Image (cartoon, rainbow over all chains, first blue to last red):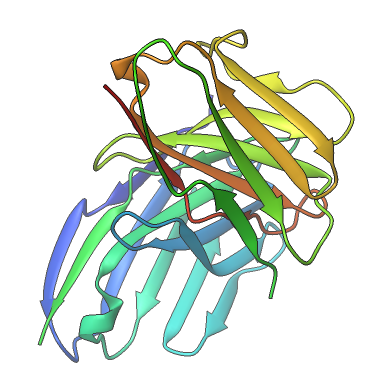
Length: 111
Length: 115
């Protein structure tokens, strides 16, 4: 059974700091892994999608890496801003029609 | 970009009534739509997966008679919470996907409060 864990559960950093969010999964047989952002009381916004054959994806200040063999993914946020404050979720597509979400990392960037 | 809408965004109802939530893909056709439930400060829990024109596949522990899902077209799926009770109060989020392996596009969510 696939399980997805995110560490840390919460993170508070000063503005401008570079930071790394971690996601681990127990079964390496995945279709893809996706990082999402969720603002309080809102739906999810897709940030980056990494296919199982890829090692990383970049979008602006965000970089996500994937190491299937070790069951890990990291989301790197460069030069953090207060507007980055949100909950970040990673989700693993196990193939078929199932996506398993981690519990999320709540990020607070202080101005 | 691909947009998914949900209606209503907020609903308050009395215990025992039924509530219908709509999920629409506005600018693309979704072969698969997903329904999730999210409790405060917790992650999303998949409730069911629906493909257009076929019956929904429910996750273990989700009562199919209580949470009726209809995927009537490639752009519309509905979730009906039947005989709602206070414990059904939650944040319900849908997502839609064009094809397997591609990203899911999420709706803004529907907050349900059952009194």
